[in-house]
Image 1 (cartoon, rainbow, N blue to C red):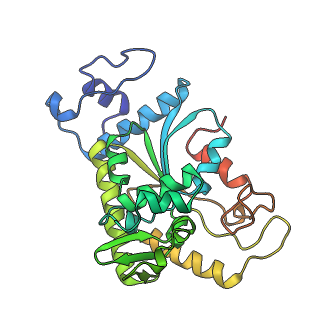
Image 2 (cartoon, helix red, strand yellow):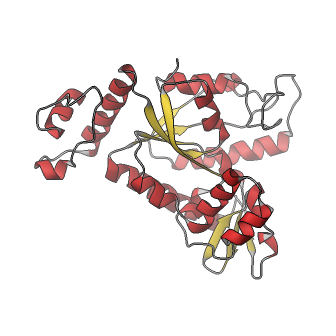
Image 3 (cartoon, helix red, strand yellow):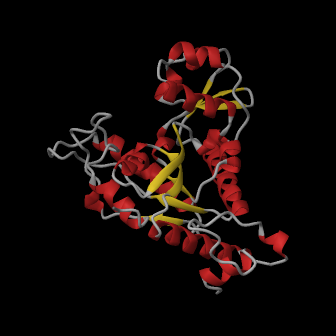
Length: 287
């Protein structure tokens, strides 16, 4: 295995340090070099660590939910290139969903942030964002895979709480695809493969934030046992589909405790700060 500095030297034609910040280098093919995916992955891991150690903020692209986003309120060592939530991988790379027009979305949602998330899901813009944005790492979590899909013809969208406000469930020809549906699961696997292929083409790391629904909150009050059990069974099935080559951030079981003071309210996936700090530590971004 070639060490990160040697790969960096080869990719930059021998000039390892070009400035106080590491700059993007030309793709290996333009240098006449032949690199394996493992070598490129190691290169990006080394560059990521060097950037963090030099004080340069690491650029993170989150595909997931607030369980990942919340952590970055506690560090100055990273910047969020983008944050795409409320979209299932079973929807994100499928056919655009024309019923969800910008007019319908804007009339139903006051929040610009929420509008943008529904628009990204409806227009299937995630691929373009992942292909064109500048980032060092994709942070993936699967909490929003709890949502059903709505299908009209060949098009589908994520039936998030925001999409629900548009009245899409009452659209002509709308059909629900539940999280447990086998067709949805196949679509999800296709979407996962699309995301990993984009990252592999860029030589970018993907890190799975492997979280679970909490059984109780910090007051000791339990969440609905059936919902928690079903939610975690669904996550377990999805986690088994993630290739072993994808890095994971894992936690002790006792880490998952709901917060009674969480800004978004009480929920099995609105945790106390322990999860955020564990994630930052695993990413070597804790302050």
